[in-house]
Image (cartoon, rainbow, N blue to C red; front, side, top):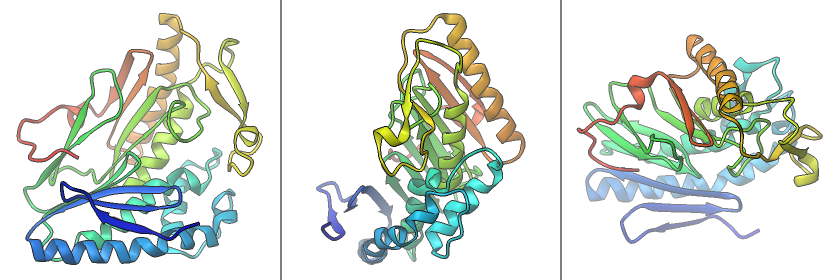
Length: 281
């Protein structure tokens, strides 16, 4: 495997890539502060994949006996959902985004974000805000987060995404206090959007799709037929119940759930568009 690559895109954003990790990040501030921030982020990113690989067997298990900073963040993000099955890998993208953000958001940086394949960590100085465009459909095209909001992480999960899902949601987008928390919660809520007894939904053991999947023999969704309005409503109700339960426990701030053109949400005030947004992620 080739080493980590760090490069500036033509628009000034920072692109970081190593193996399966592909990040676009951006900071806002004076040029000298940005140069220093990019150097810090690139240096930290160069060590991320090796750090995760060293503890990968434990991260793919439910035990989570780990020592690395990112790995510990992953474990803490999934612990609140036990005894439900959820390995630390459910929070890997968000946890990596957070770690890179910590190095990017240094002196002179007023705002910053790290977008790790759609899971986003945010840094906002006083009175700052950022608008994040979302790769989902159904009326929620972007979310604005202000410094005064309790949100610093956004994540999306679903059976159509890059990771496997036990449920049938096209997408579930979660806003939480951290990217790792949002990542874990999005996985759990997407799993809950389901019709377990529907014969038309096709599922396969995860290990048949990917031999080293942390989901093992658990059946993951590979195809969802056109559903009746009643079936869509039932699946979304199940997911919304999970989301509202997590919100009541303080694990998330808001969530939007999408299934075949239908959507439901909790914490709607945070999901509304705001005209004062200054930049788009």
